[in-house]
Length: 479
Image (cartoon, rainbow, N blue to C red):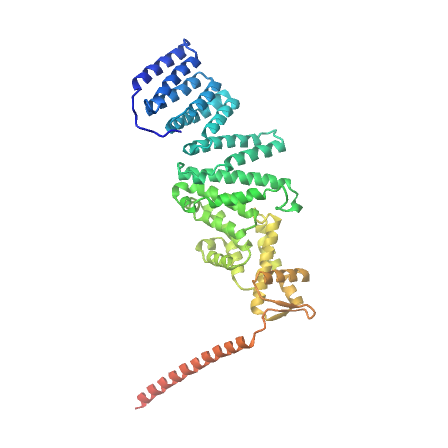
């Protein structure tokens, strides 16, 4: 493509005369479309020639007029060939190619509605071919590809579509969009760029769910043919979105769509803490806070997923901040549930199940058996941390009773928390005793003794000073 240079000659008058003449002749039928195009292209060559003229405005007008004649004549085969021909002309200017591509894109909806999908697809493929590999046309190419992707997605939703057809159409739609690296496009606006990335994520997740449904559950998510690669791509796509941009009020719709996709991705990995964080971002959205029902639902989901998350410093910090949130006090049942996890007291599972089970099992979160089992696991782990804090040693049989588990389940839970460094414990299996305090070396004992002695001497000195001050005050009174 040639760069714009200084204009040497003005063809405005010749172009005006030729455009009015060819338009009138084609409409009257006196001249065939091919003859009119030939006359336009002859003058277009003269206006384009950098050595003689380099008349950019006239070249643009002639190029647009040529494809407009094809469009008005409803000769779509000629339209496609003319667009390809003009874009490949020697020394063709970038602005001219950009103008005819944008003009053709504006006709796409009308062609699809009037002439059907076949003619529409032909023009789409022509535009994709013309724009391929051209940086200055990356944004128009992305828009055309998005329209083609949506077309393939509609094929997957056809009422009588076969399973193989649905998968192929959805995969094609996802692949078309995933090939676009829109985050690198400098000519695309930030909002449109974000919309493209969210569409990529949405289609990747749709394909991943379809593939996962075809894999037997016993083979797991890493089985051959599963949707795990698509889930990973969706996660990577989420990192391309600038979350600070989503905080702007004008972008709240994109923010909600983004976090909905991120929640789906995190739930697939059972990353409950990430889900809770995403729901917290949703809850902080002004439009959600203004709607009482949506605000309540978001806050409830924060509670559900923060208690489902495995215990660590980050989870504990978020749990305590949530407990201190005044908005939580309005949700009595959820407040008490969080309070149970914050308070360092045993929570017997039968009591939790009878108290919270009837309500929680009706929610979409805990109607899933896996997540209900995970809640049981979190309750057991909480109880074990409480026991480790208050007991130095305990028999395995007594620990089993406190945790409401079988001996085997107790040992498995204890081993898991020890391996994750949540607690320190050693099991004497022959004696059936669990030790929660490690053996201390002589140096540790002496350091503690030295520290305690310093505290004791400090208290003695403080007491002695206080007694002296009291005696001095007493002697002054008597005197």
